Length: 436
Image (cartoon, rainbow, N blue to C red; front, side, top):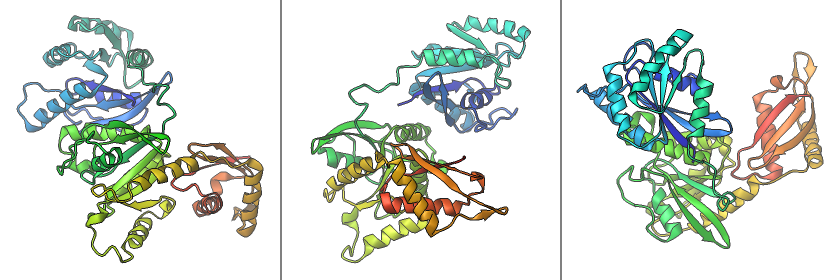
């Protein structure tokens, strides 16, 4: 799992600006008004070959009885508990503020490493002023300007130096990691338990019981797997408990580092908008994907074509995901539970598939003859060469003239033809089109 760092401090010291600087985007709302960041934002950062998650928290107000202020205080405390390292942001222009003293006192009471960030140090004079913050007693202090980027390189060097080692152990590096993801209360933990045949995970009917991601090893037919049971993903509008936000962070991290994502869907609830979002997220990360329809034992009239109707409904909802297999199971009765691992083995094999370059080029030439490339601006588009540049996940690179002119529907045609011949069941395909 990636390490997690949280950015904390009183309101309006530039935490969100620093967050945007560290993740290299404009995800957080930045405004001069105190308390704009009420929700938490998180993103991924990368520095010196190290990936880590960054969390932006709301401004800390220790004595304010306002409901929002109380909620933010709880969020900050949870952030500290969940993080491997804390960035404590202060404002050089305003100097030491009583609220800074309160935050510093809180941070001294926990045992996580703290880096003091003296923000708005955008010239030499302000940089010298930052030295007064040493009185807080923290070892590391970095004057930075989040807006211009001054000093952030040195800060990032210190961050990655003091993060725990994120490299997986050699013994587990090659073991397939299977993440069970989905909405709360669809039976992810029950499914993992059924596969493990023990009560390693807590199973209950209360949504949100699984707060953390739980890893378990499973051996089946001579193969070893790591099963990751994650907290249920909710729509952001429904994430009311602060703890739920960090459950989402953990689930996101588990999804990123898995090989196969199993989207568990409640047969009695059907395929909902949140399921679509999770599936798209797994596609975005290029993971192997399997949809498991759980609680099938509760479905009446199973002798009808109900399963086929459900399959078609899912594919109609996301037409580009027809390559994703769907299995109907029951974690309670154990029905077809082992077929999940059979499907995972198939997906892992498909994900590792390599197509010889000469064979691939011959096939692409054949399908182009079946359906000619379009003319654009009076010029005939031509694909000169194609090669598979990567597997696990599969990536194909096409060399052609004017790749930016190739329409999306023709790209989908190429992908469909590749799948028609070579399969890639349950595996997203990445196609890159470059100028020859």
